[in-house]
Image 1 (cartoon, helix red, strand yellow):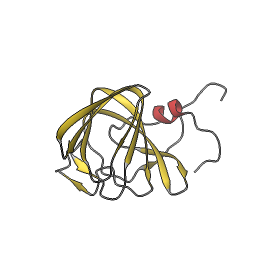
Image 2 (spheres, one colour):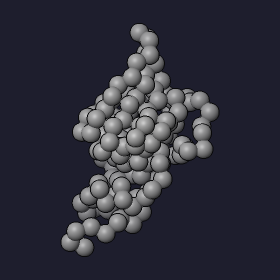
Image 3 (tube, one colour):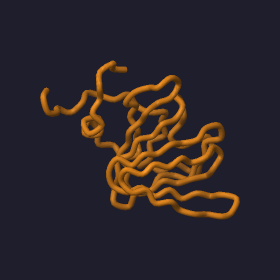
Length: 138
């Protein structure tokens, strides 16, 4: 991990893969991950941890299966939402989005319980951030 500031726009520009989060930095035992997303993820649940989302660009929807029934939350750019531990959820972005997630290091992107994983979803605990795209002042 770098001990230098990281511009999130440069981090996002350094990869193209969808639903394949990159670890930007760590805070104690937590990863700060960024991802480009489009289309649907997979229904899944994290049994032992909440999952924090911040929409950096675009619009993200998260469908939730809760005791009261199923609902969907809409997250425009700049919105944050935390999915409580154990809650089945499915993020999707019909027109694409860039997101930041905050979760314990080693947390699988498809949760502890999930439906069949489609080819376009990367089952990972987060990839290392590669070389950053050139930016202003480099």
